[in-house]
Image (tube, rainbow, N blue to C red; front, side, top):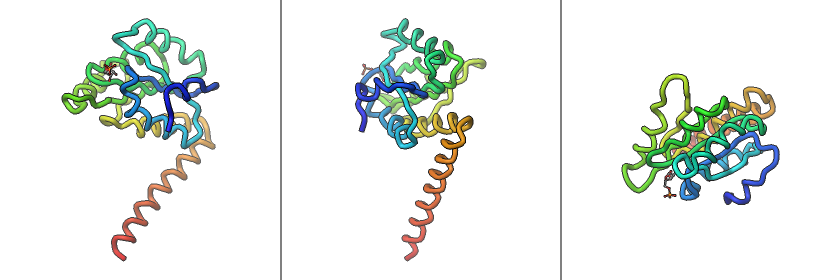
Length: 171
Ligand code: RP5
């Protein structure tokens, strides 16, 4: 389990894990856990597109220069954070639609996924923060053979898990 404050201080972070509000953390925590499973260093922060627009731009514009390779951005409702961050950084941005009380996260999904040509955001499923973390690992793994081998082992583990369940079902 991670708290925002514990994770925020990591040195040499490769992934920037940001969210529009601390209320997004229960959803976004799964991304942090996935990154930690692979030993990927990350930083965590609350960056609101609407409440702290300048902070958002400062974060997006400085991320690549600080060594960040991938940004995971989660937001709910009128979820403009991932798209706006993508507009101000050359880094790959993964958007996580955070489900809120109303509309079951469809508002978050549609706010994030329907980007104009030229400004891509790789959008995962509603509440799909774990896959956001795993996708960040895959992106980093493309230039890091050791990390890619870890991903292959993880995928082998998924296969074994399913085969074991299948076997148990038929026993
Ligand atoms: C969004 O507004 C945040 O990403 C969050 O999902 C939502 C609600 O924020 P709070 O009112 O809980 O701070 O910008």
